Length: 119
Image 1 (tube, rainbow, N blue to C red):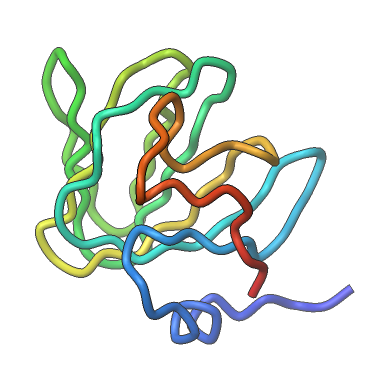
Image 2: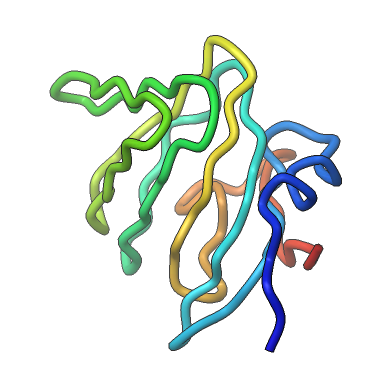
């Protein structure tokens, strides 16, 4: 067993929208990511996702509106719900999602990360 220092892990991240695995529990991956700009509209047909904002600000767009998240706030996006994250400034997030969840969900494109690295 060892502790995980989030600040050290975040300092190791260079790319935006490229989540990295920092831990695993009960079939779930714990990931960190830096976000900036607009991602893509997508959904996860079989997985819920939890976004916990560490720094910055995240706008989670849904087809029915949006939710604005500040540091220390989180949102759980239920499986099957189409969403599009937008970070107008550098934002860091902690993610909990089932192992094997694609960052782009039902969409495969140049932003899809098939096998996120562990840091």
